[in-house]
Each structure stands twice: as C-alpha cells, then as structure tokens.
Amino acid sequence: MTGRSLRPWLVVALAAGMTAATCTSSSSTSPSPRRALSVVATTTVFADLVARVGGERVAVSSLVPMGGEVHTFDPSPSKAAKVAQADVVVMNGLGLDDWLRRLVADSGARATVLVLAEELPGAEYLGGEAGEEVNPHLWLDASYAVGYVARIRDALTTADPPGAATYRANAEAYAGELRALDRWARATLAAIPADARRIIAFHDALPYFARAYALEVVGVILPAPGQDPSAGYVGALVDEIRRSGVRLIVSEVQFSPALARTIAAETGATLVSDLYSDTLGDPPVDSYTGLLRWDVERIAAALR
Ligand SMILES: [Zn+2]
Image 1 (cartoon, rainbow, N blue to C red):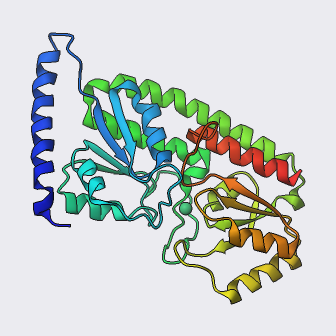
Image 2: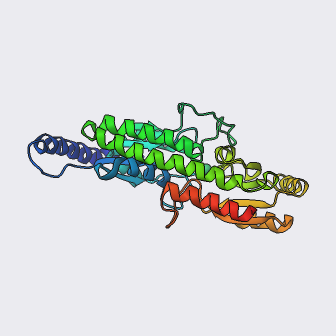
Image 3: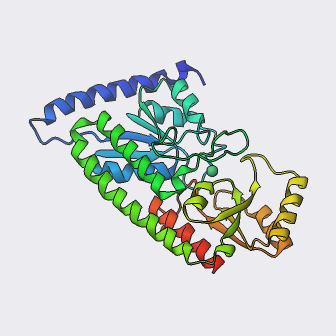
C-alpha cells in the first residue's frame, strides 16, 4: 500500500471535514442536520460499546466483520479508506488488533486513536498468549467493560464537545446495565458446584472472564491464534483433560470446531462450540450484553 494510492481518499476526507465544519457553525443558528461523528472500531464488540455511548450523535462501524477473526485479520485497502475518513478510531491494544496502528499510519489518517485496554485504571492484568506479554481480552469481565465505556465517553466528548451531556448520560445508564449484568453472571455461575466450574477453552480468550465469574481454565486448545497446535501439544492436552476430569470444552464461532470436536470425542468431554468472545453474532448475540449473557448461560447449562 502506498500513500499515493490513498491520496484521493484523503482529499475526499479533508473536503468532507471542511464541509462538516461549515455546517456545524451554521447549525448553531438553524436546525439543519448535524453530521454524525464518524467512528471506526476494530471489532463489532467495541463498535457496540461505542454505539451505546454515542447514540444518534455517532455513526460507528467495525473493520473486522461479524464472525471474523481479529487476531489474524488482514485489512484490505478499502479498510484504509474507512480509517482515513474517521474522526475517532477505537482499538483494544495489547496485541489483539495491532494491525490497526499500521493501517492508521499507512492511510495518513488524522483520527484520534482510542486504545481501550492499555493502562486501564484499576485493571489487574493476566499473562498473555504466545507472543503477547499481557492477555488482551479484558472486555469479557463486565466490570472492565465499564472502564472501556468511560474511555469511550471521554474520547467522544473530546471529539464532539457539544455532545458531552449526551455521552455522560448514555455512559452512566449503560455502566449501570453492565454492573447489573456482572452481578447476574457472578450469581449464575456461583450456583454451579465449585469443583465442576472447570473448562478447556479453544483460544485463550477467557482468563479475565474466568477470574471474574469463578471458573478455572484448565487448558487452551489453540495456544497462538493463526497457528495450529502440534500433535505433541494436543496429546498432552488430552492427557491433562483425562487426568483432571474436566467435563467441558468451549469453542467460539470464529474458529472451526473440528479440532475441539476431535478432542471432545477422545476424552468424552462435552463440547459447546458456539461461544462468543471477540465478535458479535445474530440476535440475541448482537450486542455486548447479549454476548456475555449468552456465554454465561451456555456454560452454566453445560456444567449443571
Ligand atoms: Zn481473542
């Protein structure tokens, strides 16, 4: 990708920005429609958090499509054009979606880049997947999603100061919903006997979820997204499942369930292959709250 091939898009983006500025100054005295703040997020999960805080003031889209795999995502040139035109770009950081930093640099984007998970106030970080010092999946603990929401509120307010009151009210209401969801998830899984609350995860998405909701992740099938585990690794995992007596393997929609199915058949463990972690799906999993509720209910039903 070269800067030259993107120049026409930049011209369009700049022209659009100038038009918007003109509209904004005239809209203070007339009811002409205000241009929505343009926000691009790396995943459908973060796009949903932005939509809840931004409401009608914000037009948000996701770079990774619904059902896509964020860790190994390879953005097409059309994604660079989208980023070049955005006012705010939202990513997780911690190695989950670092391809966005290159995309922003290559596209010449002037957008504010909001990184949700790095140095999150109050967060206690857990060890990472292969190649990552810190595990990036903080949002699967709903109390950390509240921290993401506060950061989104602040970034939208900086980019669109007249929306401050709207963003504050939306974020406060949504945070209340997330705290209630967090309490419900804790209570639902606490009803399962402690020695049954153990799982094998497909990729290492669940350490924060497990810590928050009192589960133990005994092992992961895919130690590094984008790399198939070796036969030796899978053999050792099968031994560990048999030795420890873990009854449940969970896998996620963005991965093929073939390997998890084989391991479940070999060990006699139950397989739940439709959990959601890094992407949203069709209703009722078309929101972050729907995703968390779904995962908790699927796991609780399988462990009961
Ligand atoms: Zn992941």
